[in-house]
Amino acid sequence: MGYRNVFWSVALVDWRPDAGSPEQNKNTVMERLHNGAVVLLHAVNKANADMLGDLIKECKEKGYQFRSLDEI
Image (tube, rainbow, N blue to C red):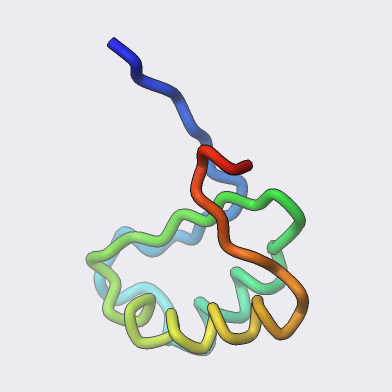
């Protein structure tokens, strides 16, 4: 059927809408970030949406790049 399994390497306990503040969630991701990381963030957590722009900016400042799964 063409399906591919992909497992994340960085995840938060963020499936609850009230889990963590934007700063806490961003810091947790940054502490766990590594080359080739696949980051799982749940959309139900507003803190993730609020910190996403800052997370992307900080990742790029540290030299990380964002790629599709086909490219990694």
